[in-house]
Amino acid sequence: MTASGRAVICVSSDELLNHRVVDSRVEAFDWPVGDTHPSGAATLSRGAAAGSADIVAQGTSAAIAWTQRPKGSPRAFWVARWSKKGLERPNLYDTRALGLQALLAPAPSGTLDVFYRAAGAHWFTVRLSRAGRFSGTSAVTPPGDDVSAIDVASAGSRVVAAWTGRGGGPRVQVANPAG
Image (cartoon, one colour):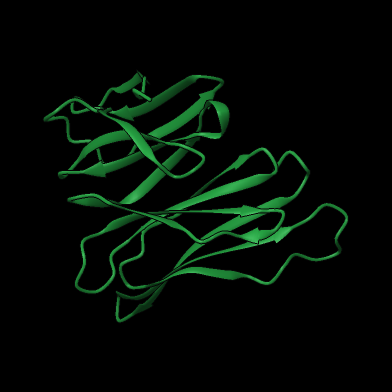
């Protein structure tokens, strides 16, 4: 829910054929407060190599992020914003050895903290400005710790990442993106 009461919904889906993903989609739609039905779905990504999307509200708009690997290119991170005026063109960020999942956490002054997996099972975070510029890339999980998934949350200027570590026990780390 945005600050103006609009619901922006994002859906990631896979089409399987013989137990193999043949199409992955990231779609979103907008449902303004007072409207009797949502907007038509906008397809943000389509292809067998699209990752799961994440979404966070930011004021009167919402930021939607996912990873995608266009044919013949490395996997990249995509961020689109859906404002009252509609869907904006996504910003594209190229990262080496990027994993499928990316997570978002709102940060101060309209910025975003993005958490992503790279180099196997190692998680990093980067801060994205409202204009789409990145800064302050930093490691979240320790080197050598095999972490397949994390959860993130934020409040004000604080961001927290949690995961189950190598020994199987839960671990919570305060992530301080340098941004």
